[in-house]
Length: 373
Image 1 (cartoon, helix red, strand yellow):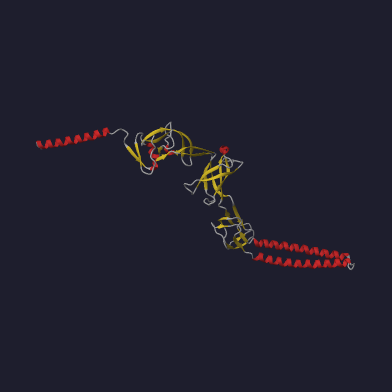
Image 2 (spheres, one colour):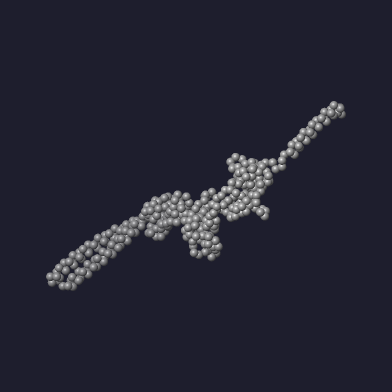
């Protein structure tokens, strides 16, 4: 059992603990409501700013070279050598390959011999004509002898013309045994190698000019009225994340696809640095109208209620503000705010959008502070 002194000591200790607890409760009660604070990172805030807003029909398609040359074999034979590889830059007129020319070279030599023989016959026939013409003038030969000499000369001249045509054809064929680049560009395909046997018309090389790229795309027929030749186009390309490219509508197809109801359009793309390559998928928007406005991330707007809301930081505290919305950009997942927010306002985005109004919000270093209002 506890003695009287022990009871007094225990009672004093209990009283002290009770008073301390009362003191803590009193301090909590004196804390103003709404003064609880949260800290957010730079990624949870967005400072509204005025920027150019472009609207127009969406389009999608693939990139293709504006200038492309498909080099085919003009004669058949054995490929003796290949002088260009895939991805290699070539200039117009540069040799790309050589096809066996032994048989054709023999034809050229034979043609040259035939021409020399025909030229000799023409020379002899011409001398015979001249001699008979002199004798006929003196009455030493009959006119029919002169006519025969002239006919022989005409036949020799025809034979010479035929020999020269055959020689020219053989020389032309000999020239085709060396395959040259028709344009300057990059070799994108080379289906043959040294030792391959090709037929006349067989594919040898594909050369593209990377500086002349185009976008072969299509737009909905219902929005064709917003598309015009010369209109600017902004688009993104698969394989180039975070990059936006620009082009200009060059041609509009006069007929829509009967199945998809899409209208093909050709967009010219400046590509002097050769950044873009043929065959990639692209999607974007024709900028049929441009104006100034405030665009914010869609994650900055709460659209669950009747009236869209944003959470704005005012004097460091969160407040809910009704807003009116304008156009949406599905490509960048942003929305225009036409009322309720001014340029320079700091908005909470993402998960921070659920912050209770009146809560003091501290932004870690790296983000702009909310402007005073």
